Length: 539
Image (tube, rainbow, N blue to C red):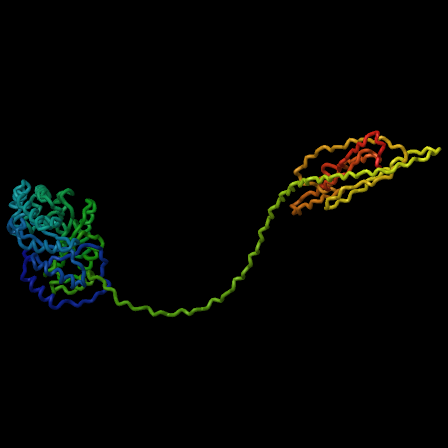
């Protein structure tokens, strides 16, 4: 595995970077190299200090504007002061991280001082036991406080990376049991600092190496991410070997899934086999397929593809795969006018809607019967004119042997009265010549007083015998009005005429046709009493 000394070798990095930034790279973009953007945060280790921060935007432009979301660096492990974070470049990385909420700061933290001094296994075992007993707690507490104070409490801590190998003093093989206790103690101490939000990444080297890395796993409660460093080197000759080998890429994915943890690839790149575009292509496809939380390529020689000119083919594959696809110019599609075929207008026959007349139901008009107010005429009673009797000279009749029979008065049949609208004049009786026969005793007929008839409010029905002098109002015929049947009029009582040569003089009174029908014909009779001994009778 690459050592931190090569990671921190600024001379090589500066030389390579200057050439690449000046010339750039004009490379093709074949579609076969493109991988679908999985949304995984991508970064690169460009340098440990301020230079690494400054190169990030240049890498982004080289990749066609792709966003570099991960800033990755290492704490020096030669002294405990470096492990405690008492280095100035942490402030540069903190400012970069705080400039965008979507960014991620990944920090590799050694677990022992003199981390690359090739300390023998027996001494490593004693250091592990000292750490498990809490001898180094203070150093990690100070680191946690430093990160929180810089405003990066959510830093991803890659603690004791590649612990299954033989390179670093913080390796696991000399005492795996106490190593796991030591890991848990560090995590517990750092999580106890107020304000922290750290994520701890357990990142072994791919393959078995010195010990199977699962034997160093400290437990789910003390691990947030299960990572893996994977370079193009043995064991395994092909990328498929790297997948299927014991403790290889497939074992890594399966183990993390079984423990419900996210995966990561904090370090990957070329090594020992030179320019290998097939490895770069397959690794990028693997990352796109399994979607780790983040990945960072180690970009300096011999591992890199941007700052290292000795891997041009791998550089082309890397750039083609990660450069965002730029849409080409929009070529307007020629508009071919569609011939307008006139649609024959077929007139829709207008079917007249038959007008159904609404039957007008006449409201039957019930005539209000006009009840005429009976006009009772005041009867004009004529004043009877009493003629002054002329006294004739009495002639002495000559005696005759023949007795004369008294002449009976001839009865006069009353003529039918013809109604007239004019009130009739009172009738004057015609005087009859007196006869020489002895005068009969005058009869005093009792005048027939008709019963008073109360006029009815009903409309008088027309009589065929005596038409009424009052004209009735025209009646508008109703729907069905039965024709009234005429009721025969009852004969009115006729006044009895006094006998001739009577002492009683009766004058008929005409009240008009309508009242006469109502009360009957009446007469006014005057009786002249000249005395029985007067010997005078004018008629």
